[in-house]
Length: 212
Image (cartoon, rainbow, N blue to C red; front, side, top):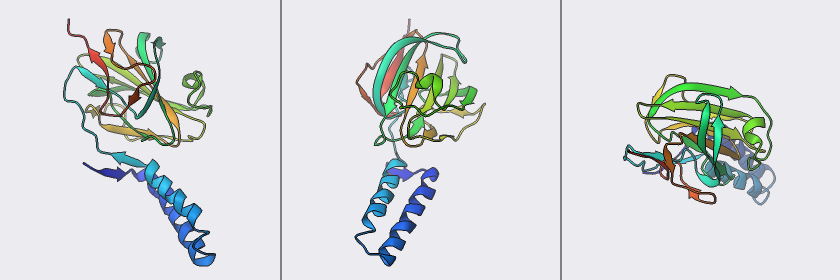
């Protein structure tokens, strides 16, 4: 167990630390407090805690830390092309921002879309904001996950490519500084969360495959 810092955080942490040292040496230690706090914030933001991923093959886990904004029926148009159960998760600036795969599977579809930076809690962000979508497919089901940038976010990071096979709960990317994540599940899946629930990426069960 433990917490590591993802590599995307090192430039931010390093720059803030240098400013802290220069200000402390050149102006005074009290003036160095604000950049020191910023350094600690970057360390906090770019953290990637270890997670215990459920081994039950029937469960789908949350791809992100945050709070469930909505659970609804919506058509997934990019890959599945059918009505699905959509779970939308809002990530505040204080949540862990790395993303994890909700199921084990192969990345069969991947699309990055340039867009705006509206607040991540607004309903239109899935259509208007910068976003990155992947479709994970295995022998039992397909799940589509979209990372959506928020008002503070300016870059979506992906560490995987089309055709990669990922395990459930595996890290695959992150969104910098505020965002939301949408998960599209087949209607045959039983959704296990509701609006307002707090979820933990890689651990919280958001859906279960119905065995008929």
